[in-house]
Amino acid sequence: MKILVCVKQVPDTEEIKVDPVTGSLIREGVPAILNPLDACALEAAVQFKETYGGNVTVISMGPPQAEQALRQCISVGADDAVLITDRAFKDADTLATSYALSMTAKQLAGFDVIFCGKHTLDGETGQVGPQIAEHLNYNQVTSAMDVKLDSGSLLVLRELEEGRQTVAASLPCVITVTKTNYTPRYPSMKSKMAANRKEIKILSASQIEGLDMDRIGMSGSRTKVTKSFVPQAGQAGMIICEETAEQSGRKLAKLLVDAKII
Amino acid sequence: MSMILNQDQKDLVALAKEFMEKEVKPHIYELDEKGEFPLELYKKGFELGFHSMDMEEKYGGVGLDYNTISFVLEELAKVDAGFAVSLTLNGLAFSCIAEYGSEEQKKSVSERMAPGGFMTFALTEADSGSNAGALRCSYTRDGDDYIINGPKTFITNGKYGDIHVVFATANPEAGVRGISAFIVEKERAGIQIGKEENKMGLRLSNTCDLFFDNVRVPAANLIGKEGLGFKLAMSALDKGRIFCAAMATGIAQGAFEDCIEYSKLRKPFGAPIATHQAVQFILADMAIQIEAARTVTHNAAFLAQSGAKYSKEAAIAKTFASDMAMNVTTDAVQIFGGYGYSREYPVEKRMRDAKIFQIFEGTNQIQRQIIANAILR
Image (cartoon, rainbow over all chains, first blue to last red; front, side):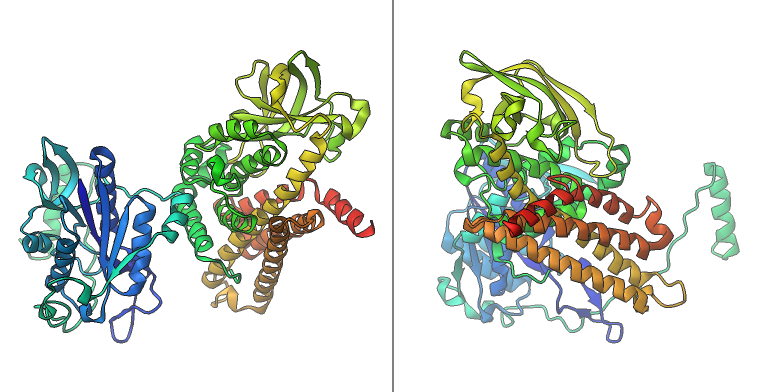
């Protein structure tokens, strides 16, 4: 089983502060971390490998320092890592990103399953995984909380807003993963040090065969970010919890009447 | 930290920090209160290799140098020194075998310990603490076996030890020359677990009495040769003192960071106490002492690693760092004021944890004796 995991290094949102004057995010000095759901996707991939055999390659598009995130992946079970890095990829939206990743996956060739995090901490679009599936003409299953192999095809338990669903999908397939069953493991001290000595394959745009330069980076992007701002926090709600449901109902009704809502 | 760490050291320190903050810290208050030994947390720590940091890689350990181990231990002790001490004990006990044991002993002990487990260093007795040469636990030869008899006290990990390194004498009259060291696996008949200490600090670690009642071990379990026990113990303790110094530095660093945070928040006169020079000078003195302790610790670690003599420097590091940790944690309680004296805040625990570092692995008075002997030789 040849497995690919797509990961992204993102700013740690817990550490991000907002400029009180301009209202924009202060990105300087914010530590970069492996996107948490990508870490879950990797855990899913490594467990899949441990159960059914195979090899896990991890890939990221980003600046040279994204190598750190890839080494983290190797320390917890990925076998190989590829970083695609080039100024030409800069300012890519999800479409340009998924195109570049899928072209690299094509070049590396032969992946049976591609795992992605359901979405990233910074963009939260959840589009890159499904788009990779479209680019590669793979099946896709999103929001996976458990993945099994059954008679050559995948059985995926999905976590939906209103319940759970099991779907079967034939290979090759892209799966986007939620956290539920896949808490990332700790590396051991040994695996951490071994990951520091592992060679990471680095590809520039020109080293990816057949890559259309008009479809990557800013020129390949169909969305433009005009402004980023912090939404105003809404007023906190009120919780009514009296001793009995009837008392709570009466209190609610009185509040609604007083507010001239009913 | 103002020392330059290489990438491996940075990563291992970060791993120790993440593990301790996420896995251990949330339970510390309760475990400290109850004095409970968190075996499951230790097992998680084994998976990462914290119990085998100084065991060579060829025996299944992590195989770190003394400086790197010291950096990691400081980070572990910054969150909980008791947790760090229990894990370090394996290194102390295994180093006896690593240095003087046979290849078969190294293999058999490491095969058992590398995946996870506890070792003990059973030297201390009720009447022989500082004067380790006066121990009374005895051994006799019986055919192809040795038979060990006697009590041991204050044994870290005692209740949970898988393998004990036991020091016993063939003849108490012979003094230090009569002492030998043995590998005693926990399955050997006659090992009794005695009273567990209800300690002031290090409450996540286990300390108890052990009694060896006609415990029979094969002659192959003798470490090195007969009469080598005292030398072997002292050599292990020299190394252990460096690690003690690192852990004491960690306790102080933790208290120091608590104080920085608290002094910026606490506003008894409308301004944070961090703006008051009286508090600033205490914080500055903490920083001076911690930096100095870290430096002497890593100097001793560097000497040990390079194969030079380091007994004096290890004693200096252990004494300076533990006295420093006691000073810094006492001042930390002062900065926290009434809250510092309350168990709800973490600083009083650090003060309780720090105290033992002036006592174990050779009291600081014995350390000063070692230092004086070295400089007046």
